[in-house]
Length: 132
Image (cartoon, rainbow, N blue to C red; front, side, top):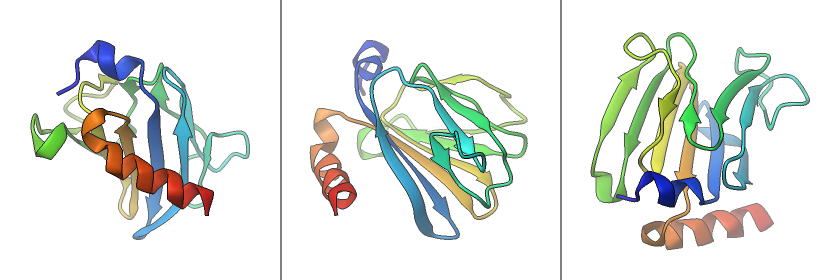
């Protein structure tokens, strides 16, 4: 598993899945803040997500959940698995692994993947998909 310092300096990719379709995805510089919602000035604009504007990530490493949401985190090959619900840990949650999946509401999920040497092929596929 990458250390906090290793993740902190890495780019990360965030995508929003609405009813099984990726509706928006973007790659962010290390330590970026990421807002999601229906407002046009959000980093990830999703019309039907039920949020106007929510600070999903701050400093590229702190995850902010919304009421009723759940997060699944793991390292390479599913190691260091963690599942947390908003009611157990309102936020922020320090991200310490390279893969995160957040269920914001039924039918709306967000995935976050940090660039590491162990997921190089996945990153190449993401970059190729974003270019096309």
